Length: 400
Image 1 (cartoon, one colour):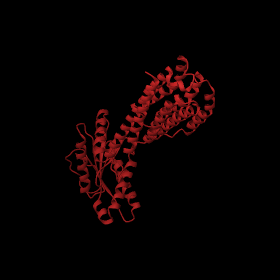
Image 2: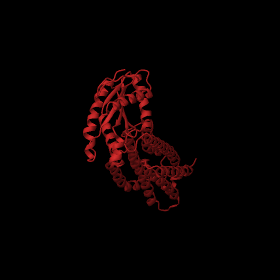
Image 3: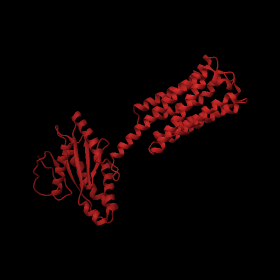
Image 4: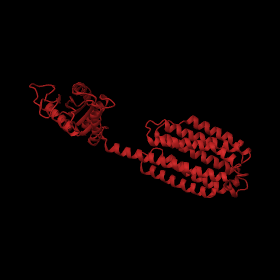
């Protein structure tokens, strides 16, 4: 297999992935970094085209520099693309040092014999440095999953291969006597084949990562209430069921708190839906700030919210609900000068060994109904579906 044939394959691969990343960037705005990666592979096509015209030139020095520079720019775009995708700060200083070093090396590279091992080493060093930067960026990503580990491994291997090329040049007696003879050398065939494998592996892994992240983004959108910025009913059911099963497995308590804004229709009718929307978003923010990282908050619809408190029994959840109830009446009306008072009613139910999420929701709804029936702005707890509330008004714990 000749180097020219492998180079043709590399050009086709670069075109294919430039198109693929371009489509991803065009069709999904959440695919961060895809445009940079599309540009990187597009420059790869230019780089290969320059390699093809090299044999027919009488004075190849300028083209050799252009090949070196276009690949360096291509890899820099790759560094930026990966950095943007993972929202990791671009190592600007390291990239700048690599570029300054690469520019400083150009006269030295051109002055060395074309096929020498030292020339090949100096030529490959900037590429290896940029590939190491990609590896570091991936390792610094906040969320590292199996594909990130695979990408870091492939990227690290690619950096190693760049540094391995001088050894290959030495093993096969140099690259060639002159740039025009590069494509006819055994080194070129091996180097381009290894490059093709790495390029395909990196691109496919990056595409898989972007497809995975877009899928996660779509799921998150489908599970998020746009107004409140928290889980909707679908998200509550999906994540709540997992929390319930985990609590059963560990044998830890779990308590569901249903929350309903009192007389919410009156707020909408009296002050308009824009004020009602503001109350909803403010309450969502208040609830999110009042719970822990292992807890869950959701808007189930309209003015009804739910909180799942992990590791909290009914008594602990009651104290939390009381604190939230008081905070609502004190804090929520502050931004709404036209609204004199905003209160909410609370219904609590603790997970029982035989419960499913629907059972927990049903008891919490019954407790919420009890709180509403007793004049609103109450916290009520249901231990069973049949509960006789104590006499009198005010906040209480009902017993089953």
